[in-house]
Length: 294
Ligand code: NAD
Image (cartoon, rainbow, N blue to C red; front, side):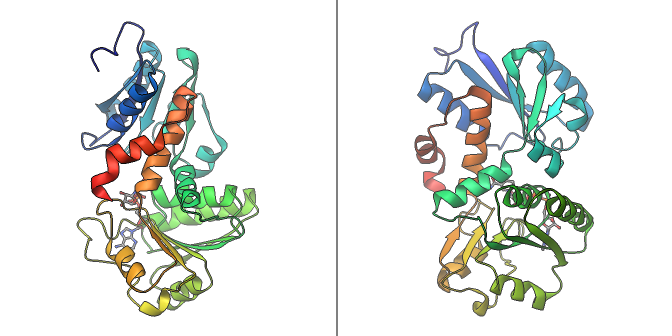
């Protein structure tokens, strides 16, 4: 690393809290080194209170781009000059580009494109498909919007009647009015509707985080009859690499059981492309970062 850094090195930041556990610095720095790009990527512990100053810092220092994670994904929007159509629909940003370092900041969201690309890499095409999606928080909303933008036939969201439910209703309205995809949201407590929806879907996506600590012993699907040989099951959780849901789906013969590693990798790759204009060497990064988790 010390041999790479110079007075010309361009900085990419990551602003979030807590952030020290993030895989993104390693992912991007290893990719810069592999491609011989004169960039460095650093994580900064930034919450909502420091956000305005941090964005000012990006402009003042000519930082070329930034990833943004919780709790700043929505809060950063008023500080930006422009946001992409997908970020506008999602209402959140995870990637900011400072084009040529001149201070004009454009916000993007790559979680949804990352998820759709992860599915495509597994041979799963979402176009014209009926998809049941559990969860309407940050990840679920980005995925739902991208499924709409990329031409899914229907996105049927299921969520408990908590704070995210109202957000899901707004997302559904936007997808229905701005894309050709039919979207709906139903209370997850309606188990019969949930099962019926999955029975009519070719893809089931869990974006709730159920299956991750401290909920690692839980799965929203526990009835073997729900799993079919033509059903793709995708869980956005990547740690553990095999959630209870994915284990259950495999045991009962689902067509595919896909974890969130690909989504994590490709949301990073999409951001990398926006920062540098180059393709991340994804196979190399996948081996480096995720081998032991797979
Ligand atoms: P969030 O808190 O914004 O949303 C969580 C959603 O799940 C909400 O809609 C909530 O209503 C629902 N939910 C919460 N507890 C539930 C329960 N017990 N039963 C049913 N529904 C429940 O969180 P998020 O940022 O969207 O993250 C969700 C998960 O996605 C986390 O596990 C996170 O690690 C993962 N994630 C993965 C990637 C990736 O790249 N693979 C990216 C982002 C998030």
